[in-house]
Image 1 (tube, one colour):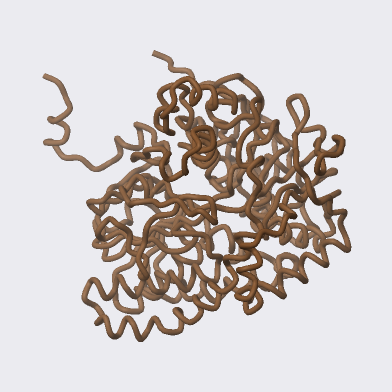
Image 2: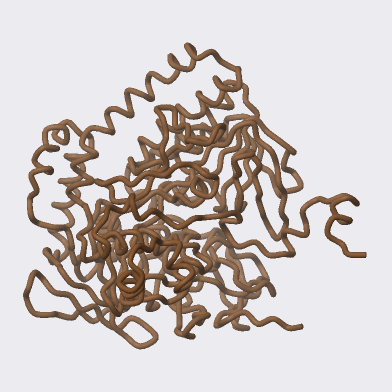
Length: 479
Length: 98
């Protein structure tokens, strides 16, 4: 691997540009470089690994032990990339990946626009918004944030804290914090207890799933050490200027409060679709995973020629599946660019295909079991929906009541909802689902925010560092 | 609101937060160090002025914006700490000086 230091080291163009150095990006880079492609990996973080293998390269043995064996599975992915001929720029913010296959990237206040023959988006997932009252208070973070701090800095929450929500990550984090001797006071579990017929239908596949035993063992060991309060139907974070307590209700019971300094929220993850969407890739609503995902074929190709998408950014399927799919996308890029034949691609892809079908088994049950309840996916009247512009649930529902057939883009005009620096990443799903519920139509009918480049804030000073010649200057200078 | 596990460290890095000297470990992000140093909040919202602090720690939410070495609104969770760095918290709405 060739580590680039700054945007000055970037090539003017490459065969395959990969955005994101998580499992999908790493596996794709290794596979494509193996076939002789000139591969460039751009990643926003200081080190490769993505969120799942964050800090792996530098974690001491004691931290690795706390984080568990699944974390260490990233070692082979990292070494695969390190041993490859791919170029890699860390700390690089990609703010454009256009349908003309141009990539806008910034690092350390300097920008460049480079070309690629193909682009692979491996931008992963983000945590689903959890718009409860008080979720903007300092002291309220995501479970992923707590896990990231453990992975990259060996830090654990100090002072009394609770975890709240649903999903595999919440339980994994709990077990890791127990191993680090920093257990939460309690887990406020919002998982719906009602067994749905669909869950039962998905059960046989789950029994053959690699997730089953691991998951059950994990949950059982957490329950032995931490108080788990199940059936939570209401959650509020309380405090002035800082979180002081968490109020919750079980079923229709009375409201209880716990005094805490930290609250870590989680209710699943969703594809980070901003880049794909701004590039013009078609998105579709996933009715089981309750999120948008880009439309891709069996090789990860999106609706935009030349742009493919791998990993959780194409639909949540987990780290192991992301790596397998990344490999497929890397091989497909090589085939598309004529470095290997399609027959060779298919053959080399076989082991990854087999892995993928193994991890696909039981995924559906996992998705159904941990489907976050409606009440926590929609904001109550006084809770903030859009954190950047401080738009409440009431404001959203009132606009829909007043204007009828509105979508997320009208909310931008009326309320500035989704127009802050996060560009809808923390409110987009909530807004789509709330409008759909109010209008009594499906989320796919409501649609999503229209996203445009730059998808991350870039300063004018950074834009001004783009190389330009006299003609460029004459085009914009008056007189 | 975070503490370090008892691990063996090498590579301490010294910087200032709001003028006070603070020591972190190589590999920490500015946001991680802020949380360890007790800054659950690091800015005031540009709309209401309410205090806000790191939320996602992965570059998505833009809650951890601070001024780093004179450049405002940087995502503290994406910037690794460096020797001699100057971090300023508490910024609110961006001001434009003509």
